[in-house]
Each structure stands twice: as structure tokens, then as C-alpha cells.
Image (cartoon, rainbow over all chains, first blue to last red; front, side, top):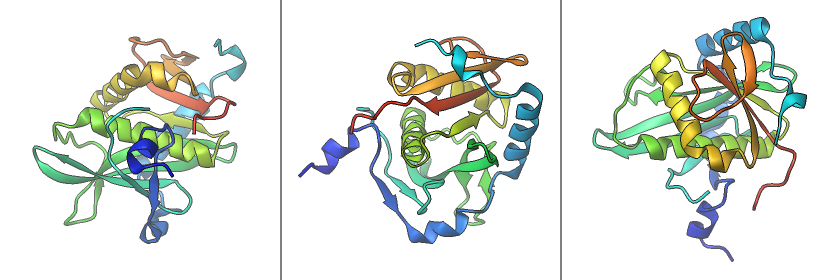
Length: 54
Length: 152
């Protein structure tokens, strides 16, 4: 069995699921930022993934 | 990712994360939220502090708690966790202020060599997206997980 320290060194972190946080799942807490992002994406679009060079 | 980071708590959907920053100004609750912008798996990453008295979230505050590296590493960890749940998500991020965008850029630069192994990273310069270049100035960022398996 892996220890917590070993698990914490992995890229995907150990996340404790807290059911009390479920009330935020469908609530936008940063509406201004989401609106700003929408406008920016409408204007600029998304990156062209096919142009990504490894 | 052998980086010092805080313990994350999340909702069931892994879209809302909290953690406690502990530094020279005491314990401060941080919030990270991934909000769907469009149905094509495009999410906005938001990040801020929650006032424990009022419950209000502030994404413009400069906390200056002396642990910014650990905080950034924890936000990066939240991105890994979210992308484990939604692997084809595009994540859009920009700061609520120029200073915060600069902070994001510093964070990407700091962890670039680790993160680029697992994510495609793009930066928006003027009105164009380009593949992220370390050290260059960008207004916004988009990351998407590469279609490879994480080291778990």
C-alpha cells in the first residue's frame, strides 16, 4: 500500500471529496471572469491544436 | 510532481476545489473553480480567496501570505485532478487584473518543464493564440491535457 507521502508526489493529487461542497458544483462563483472569458473566446476563438508541436 | 502543495478538497464533480493557505498572515481559504463556458468542453479557471466571515470570494485580492509557490503548485494540482475527470477539457485562464495574469504566467513558467509533459499550453498574444513560449508575455492561456496517460 502506498503512503500518503508517496501518493502526494504523484501528478494527480489526492483530493478529499467533501459533499458539503456539492452546493457549489453548479454555481458560477466568478461570473465576471466567465463572462470575460466568453467575450475573449468569441473574439479570438480557440487555439488550433493541429499546430501544436511537441 | 514532487512539489510542496496543500491538501485539496473538492465537490463530487471535481469542478470546485478549496484549500487552506498557511503563511505569515494566517490561514486563508483559497477557492479554485472550473466553470463551463461553452458545451464544447471549454472551461474557465477561476481562483480567489474566500473571506471566512462574509463568505465572499475575491479574485482581485493580493494575499501576500508568503506561500505563493505552494499555492500555485496546489492550483496546478487542481488542474491535474480536474483533467483526470474531464480529459478532453480546454481550460481557459486569465487574471482578473494584469498583476494576476502576470502571476499566472510566472506560475506556468515555474512549472513549465513539468506541465508541458502532460499538457498542450497556448498563450494569447494580442489577438492570436500561439504555442506557449517560456518567458513571453501573454494576456490569457489555454491548456489541454495531452492524450497520454498520466504517471499514476
